[in-house]
Length: 434
Image (tube, rainbow, N blue to C red):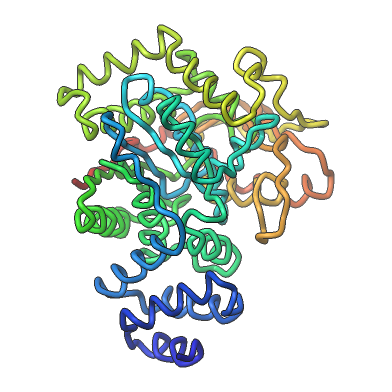
């Protein structure tokens, strides 16, 4: 077979056969197809898409490109959560321990930052010593012992997606519904789940800019799950401004710890609890949302959820002491303030600009070879609807490299708009797909 012929065929609106897809994914995973050819093919898919059959074959080929986990021997329900990517989206980190403390097994396999959005794996690795690269045996052992694991993709779990994921990040092919859906679902189906809860981001800071395309993505993933006998529920949530007050890596871990202590910003807390309720219901722990909410609140107030996070940190060789002393997380050498140029009401706090600024600052990757600085990021002090005076701080900028700071500030300064009147009303949860 010829990769060039496949690129040309898809470029011109043609379709692949099942044999084409299996051959392509297998040979790319084995290193027999170069990145530049796969990049060209991904761009063709970005423009022309995949039909339902092609998408099913693509997902299946990635799913079986490596090991598949089997937790069928565990009686407890296996439920995971996944986000399509947002700025300041640290939801998975407090959510997993909360659900696990309520009896759900959470074999969570997460990703690294993608484009302007942060990655759960990068955030977790800001905890000193924390290891996210686990082989299948270690992954399984931690799940059986603690009911939860927070890991990245190992070399042998869905390796095709790990390779394609990194390539998409640097070739402008991230916001593609079939590529997003197959990436997420191949990883999640490899976990041997009973159910999956999705957080599909919608807005200017998300890959899906409008509700229609976000709903189509959600429906696509729900359909893939149904075809594999896995229950999938999706919430559509807003991503026009960052979630929470912290954007970065170590600082988002600190904010996640605050949520597990019953604190944290209201928007993060709302999304965490809404998704956790869905996880408990999907797992059959309860069918009553009010009862699920009560169980989750008790897991937090009793300290059980925080303890569960501590168990995971210790099991994955991290420094458990960060739970009581977040200053043990990486700290920046410098901090600067972005101040309001005038008094008024914040009418725009652009997640996209802030996300790109975070990449420039060193909190994300411009290329797949880049190293992340876990200490840098932003603390946001004013969001949409907040009143500010002239000179008030809009955001604190935590930085280590002055050249990076200067390029980041160019974007950060344009992220806020301040008006005279009230900001438009908005809601966090826009819709759902079941």
